[in-house]
Length: 58
Image (cartoon, rainbow, N blue to C red; front, side, top):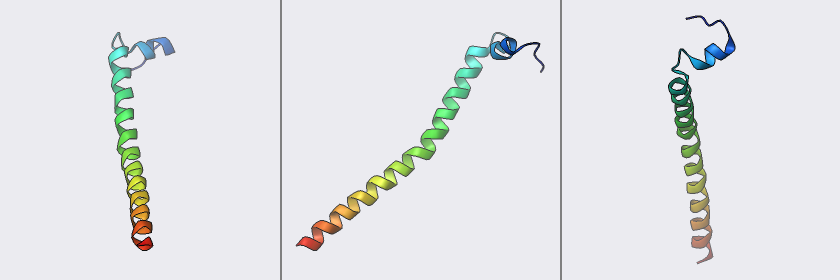
């Protein structure tokens, strides 16, 4: 598939809104698949450190 101009490329044969929305959603899902486990792990480690400090004070 070739396009005569950049605006035709963005329009994607009048399917641009669908195509770019699909790309955006896909990138958002991929970013969440990376970020959420990292944030969850950080939260878990902080909670464990807090729990260990509490237990060592007893």
